[in-house]
Length: 141
Image 1 (cartoon, rainbow, N blue to C red):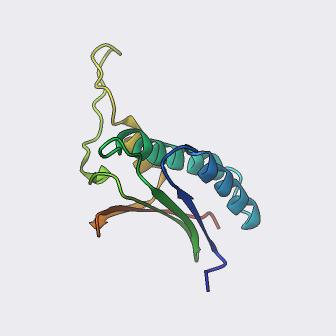
Image 2: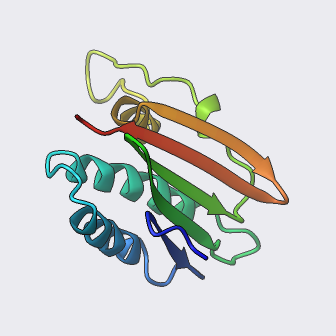
């Protein structure tokens, strides 16, 4: 029996983009009365992670499959994102460097920095040919 405090969204072939995940987050947030101030931050995190997988995770021209699970775990929200794209550990990406001008700034890496800033805990592993990213956010009392 599925846990009633969780929701799973499956994206196959990348055709739908992040919209199904975004819509499910809204339904989940409403059902479990997540704080309204938290929901836009969660949209940012899911959009960043899932869109990067869909954009950069193609193997042999095939878009990756992505499963996103939203789960309430006591006083925190858990997000688990599992994909069959090439191995990529976002925790190994160094923090961005900020230059004095836009022209001197590095390209990329800011999204992962934002995800790290928003979430309280992030864990990654690669198992059975799949990336598994788990992100947690403590819910306000």
